[in-house]
Length: 387
Ligand code: HMG
Image 1 (cartoon, protein in one colour):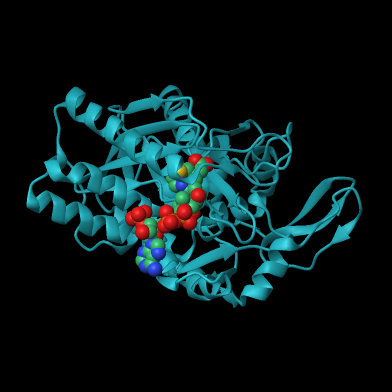
Image 2 (tube, helix red, strand yellow):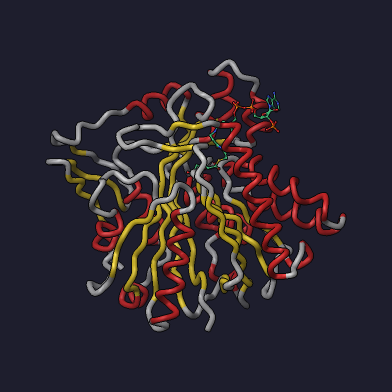
């Protein structure tokens, strides 16, 4: 039985800061952010938006009435949870109007969470082939102002429907997993921002990719020529390229050229958004599928999921006939183009917005899904999805 991604869409908040302007404000050569890190713009959202609104706005792009009746599993992968107990998936289940007899929960393992969610969804669909699962990756990547991690922030969500009739990517069973207890990036309970050892995180990412990819080749007797493209977790656009280049010397010149060209297509959207944490791999996948003119049905893709701490997975999938008709390139490109550019001052003001969750606060944000009121530490949401 085939199981895989039937629909996929992303949402990012409607504001961004220009990375050349941010570099200038931080007295850094713009080349460092634009080329050294590889980011042109960075998404930022106001306090009337959170992981639930990002997730709901992403999911509402792809959900039909029939999907809402068939979905019986809602999983949110996130490391930006605002409740230690109640899962954001439960709120989303209501906001999106998913039928009542469903399971909803949240998964955390840094940027690996959504991939764990997809694995759980695959197993569920194998047992219940007529049902569908909604897997959402939603995060707010923040390191604080004026520090080394600042140019690698971002925010947004990717929503996917996993089903037994996947119209985009049929996922295979040949995966390689790796777990290593490493403190490269972690966020102890109560910390607003993660603690990060940047150089160690880069090194662990690259070594993890080398390990899982090499093991994949050994176990499955496949090599670079198997893959039309490789998609990576993209914390910033230079990162995946560095990992790819670490294994490419073993590849033929043709394989090198193809994989590097596809990599560039996979980072088009991330370059304008920044890190989505657990959504980054899937934003890269959407970018690859929507910006490549050389991919075709039947092509095999390799995907590298990495979550600091550190858990990695290399897995594969096959593009399905007519996959391009399931994509939303015009919608996604308009979403990025229609954002409002903030000055560095405005970005800092938005970043520093403080909400007292114990008091009553009201917002008037026109987004279809946004927070309207916060009262007694409960967030109330606008829901204009009437499908
Ligand atoms: P840094 O110390 O500010 O930067 O930290 P750097 O000095 O290493 O420079 C970065 C690159 O810019 C270097 O290139 C410089 O040469 C180049 P590289 O050696 O890497 O090829 N550079 C220039 N290039 C052109 N023109 C110039 C110029 N100047 C310098 N003028 C770092 C960078 C990414 C470490 C920092 O931003 C950080 O700590 N970010 C957060 C951690 C991170 O993103 N790590 C990535 C791997 S871990 C991961 O992906 C998991 C994660 O998503 C979390 C999760 O799993 O939940 C983060």
